[in-house]
Length: 403
Ligand SMILES: [Zn+2]
Image (cartoon, rainbow, N blue to C red; front, side, top):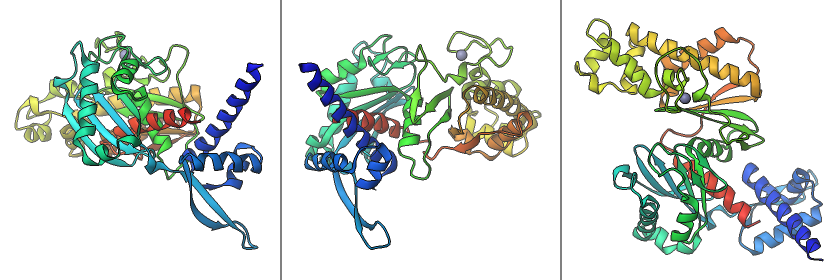
């Protein structure tokens, strides 16, 4: 019967994926370590790794002493540099195209303003055209075109990663745009699509060489507040794919309508544009002396960077605005952790790198809960490394595809 054959093939694919996934998570390992890690017999691991070496997916990388009697063991790893991923990162400021290897190492990047691309009916066609030009204009990519295996597209707003439908990217893509299928057709390459914060959370766990993260809450502060729940190194999506939207937790009675349609969301208190609006209201030579001078008496020059500087330099009213906002952020995070009970909260964003901002946030957290069971960590990714999210989703999908 055919079913037997299918089942056998599924088991084999599952085992191949288990090997690749383990190497992706933990880096170079010996066959013996892989066997212990995934619970397959050493003979089965040897067979499958020989096959993967023959296909050029993994390779032997080093020899190490296995034990005291001097037996040598060979380490194997994914041959990251044999494959190239194209990343397409789109937010309200622009589109960034990147090429990286499977492990996220950057080859080349290029950023363009969004106005030429977004808000058009044929936006997917424009993105495809940008990708083609990006590849053909770069000598390294052009020369290694056969190594380009997957495209990772990370975009703001809701995305159904399975069907590849955009469900609202703040107007950048038309609602219901079949971005995955359309791009695949035009570029003749497989495409993985994901929301930008979730993609970034995957990059945090996949490309973090310092720490092995299993379960965490990842939070990105920027124009809004995005977050992703990581359970067993995967994104927890929820029944309707909106799990982890911490920015839309109700925190405060206010009249500010949130982008989600509700009022009083965390985002309307701590989001960058809301903080800027609040600071504009109190902006004067008396109230906000440092900020006033920094902005040459012009409200239009107020941005998050100089707000944080003004707070650090003692502008009381600015400090009060941030203090209030950070109290609600601390409340929302602690409440969330009470429900999901993960080990770590990982914070990403320019503001968290500011001394006043993160100290005040931690103080509020301490006031609410001085016996925390979770750690607060700062992301290992730089704020300009959003492209790593594209690499992470493309790399995961590629390894699944070849298993
Ligand atoms: Zn909201």
